[in-house]
Image (cartoon, rainbow, N blue to C red; front, side, top):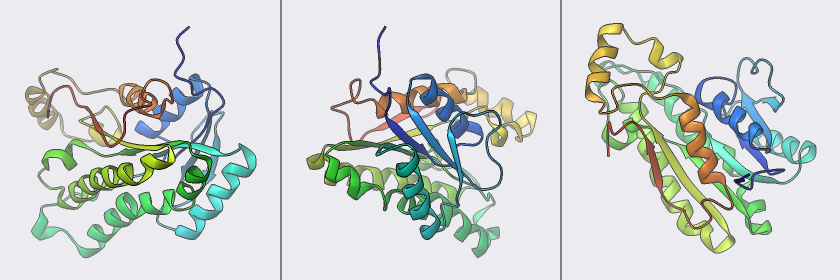
Length: 240
């Protein structure tokens, strides 16, 4: 049986209670990893992973969370910075509160998640980080100036961290999903969905598990050991 080498590895997934995050947690458990995830409101139902209520916008809470994960599961090998929100509107109508909320969660949240863990990864000379970006960060999207800004920043952050971290044996990559069958996409009106699907060469939306496999590949110490600073697009050729 081919292994991705994640058996027994401790991996943290932020926002792992639903959608893409929950699919990532499930896939990592299936591959033998020891998984912890954060949630803000409600834990994932029926998950054998370690769920911790912690808001990525709160640096103190994230420090405590990181300490709890290492105390209960062991040294953290991998981090998936997945937690994110959207507050969509046309730019002239976008409020300062909606701008700040998205920046605080999607961008500052990455920093708050990694800050307590990266130094320990450097000391251990091992680790892998995957930041969840978006097709919006690659090409922009109408009504998402705030969201697109954070997802583009996630790519820039990942590339810079990869350059710094390589000498310590730590890799950093990003996954940029296109339109994936999650609650966010399900809320789109049917006529708009039809228009979007018509633009996608694969002629369908992606599935959360397809993103999860991409993340697992980039976390793998065997399958992607020489890959760092890259963006893996999971979008059915919607943007290449």
